[in-house]
Image (cartoon, rainbow, N blue to C red; front, side):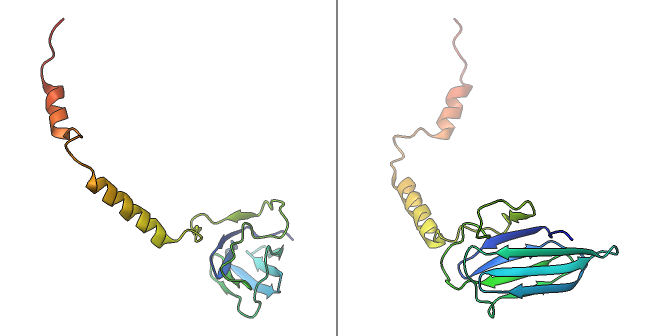
Length: 152
């Protein structure tokens, strides 16, 4: 028996954990308040995978769910305290070699996207309000560079 490779990412209301197991069967997922147990069998060789995760924070076991596809088992863990970020998935700080962050789905949700847009809008307004007289035109620069140079 070996642990299944998994990746995870955080959202304000949920934490998502994807167990990367192709052609899985006999999938068992048990959600507890502070841990999840995962198990399945894959392949024609009947390779058994089991993972137990002691979670960083508490979840709502009744609000959490999982879905099996041909390529993986995706678990949506409903946070007991929505809006609180999880810096890691597990309670223990030690690195699990079978667990990684899913950077394709990671979003720094603590930063408000509206705030980012307002910063961009302020920057755009600042750039538009700058006087153009002090800045040389690109066309003038190109023309100046094309002029013949004096010989020494």
